[in-house]
Each structure stands twice: as structure tokens, then as C-alpha cells.
Image (spheres, rainbow, N blue to C red):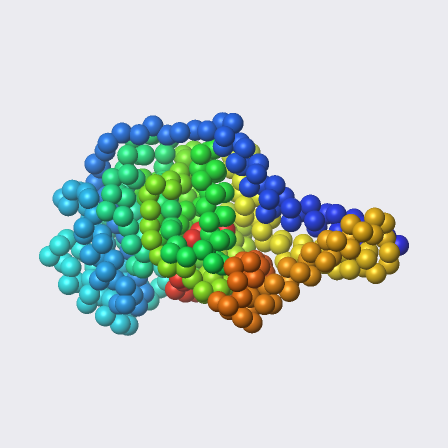
Length: 380
């Protein structure tokens, strides 16, 4: 009577524990035992900034001012705004920076991947920097970035997104960054960031037009070519924390992209071809199973408690813990900012796992359109 529920309980608990605690601890330990610090040197290669934009009039002028004020030789910096069928003043605003060297591609609406492909085709720089319209870069970010390309093994460098607050989604993002820092120190991060990813231009491969996670596909293609993708927290990009609702939309899109990624690049699941197989499986694939594992854990735990399975005190304790966690999540949903930090974190955790279900639904329905999100995390 208890064999199957017990097996389901322990397997789902182990899966959740490894995904959210075991793997982060493992990659942290590996990064400490065998760190791979890249070689650095002061470099000033030519750099092309590619900014794909769709109806970004609210943010574009500020972002272009930011890019034009970077501490980098202006003659070595090319800024390209690839407007994807914008119907607002995006093109007009970008053209207003023409005297400062900003180039504009006014493209018909075709999606972000097509805009990125067109931008890279126009690019003349040895390096290409992909960035979004909303986030602000530190003045010295580009100089820091180019110094890492002195290492011939480095194919891409990802900057760190810093959020103004850490009440809910910000706590999750801080946790996510700890994992990325460790992955980058050990070998490579398994994905980039839409807000700041720099690559060697000759490594870029045109994206399929239906690609949802360009900031994961391009870095992983670079990894498969034998190069490293670094994650460097000293290269800072700033944005405000998203609402939980906004983070749900971002996460649903990201996880739909992860399902698409498994179809587009099955070689990522082949340890003979993907040296980051363990990291990719642990960081990307297992998180897709989170909602099923959580539901299985709760259902099996409830059955074991109701039927008095030994060791009953343990099962009763973990059931109470789960119910308390979901209760805090409900409080966070109902009370919002007044709920307290722990309730908001619980609400965020439950919401992001619910987003995995929504991501699968979107993928199965083919709902893969480019949508504007609050901040530029990768497919985590």
C-alpha cells in the first residue's frame, strides 16, 4: 500500500532537492576546486552594438545616450538599432542620433531573431554586443568586457543584471546569479542574457526566425564550437525589479523557449558533443520538471500521512512544511507588498513553477512570438 507512494515521495523530493539545492552546491564546489580564470589584457577591438527594438520609444533615447557615453573610443564603436516593424517613434528617435554614429535598420515586422540577424549582417566590429533598450550600462562596462577576449578560448562574455530591489523576483534572480557565477568560473554559463552578451562576430550563426531564446541559442552554439562563455559580475547592467506578474510572463516565455531549444538543438543532450551536458541538464532541463515534481511530492506526502505510513512523524512534518509554504504563497498573492518578504519569495517560487506549465502550453500551441519583458534574464 505504501511502496508506490513512498517511491514517488522520495524520488520527487530528491529531484526537487537536487535541482534547487544540490546542483547549485555541486557547481559551487566544482568552481572552487577547479576554477578557470581567463587571461586578461587591455584591448580596444572594434565593437558593434546590436540593439533589436520593437516599439521602444519610452526607453530608446536614454539607452542610446548611455551607449554613446561609454568609456570606449568612439571610432571603434558602431551602434546599430534594428527596429522590428516599430509603429511608434522608435525609428525617429534612433535617427536623431545619426550624427553621433548610430545606424538604423527600419525593418518590417519579422520577429527579434530576424532583427538580430540583420543587425549582425550590418556589423563591422570584431566583437558584437547584444543589449536591450531598457537597461543602463556602467560607463566602463565595455572596456571590462573586451579585456576578457584577450583569452583566445573565450567566445562570449555575459554581464550581470543588477535589480534595484530583492523582495520577490529579485531574490530569485540573486540566487540565479550565484549559480551563473559558479558555472562561469568552472567553465561556461549555459546561456547568455538579452541585456548584455558580447561575442566574437565570426562565431555568430544566423538564428532561425522562430527562435525564442536567442540569448541561449547563440551562447550554446559558441560552446559547441569549443569556446567558453564567461559570466562576469563586475560587468554591471541595471534595471528595476519586475512585478511577480511580469516575471511570470518572462518565465513562461523563457520556459517555452527551453522546450523549443530541446527540439532545435538535440545535440545539447548528447554528452559526447556537449561538454556542459551536466550543467545544461541540471540548470535547464530539470527545472522543466518542477511542477510535476512538486505536485507529485504533495500528493504522495498527503497519501502517506492519511494512511499512517512509517515514519509518520517525518511525513507529517514535510506535509506541514509544504502546506505552510503554499499558505505563504497565497498570502503573497493576496496581500502583495504588505505580505512580507518570505511570503513574496514563496509566491514567486510557486508562480515561476506555474510558468513552466504555461511555457509548455505556449510551446505546444506554437505561441512563440517576441514579447517585451521586464528584464533580460536568460533561459533559466
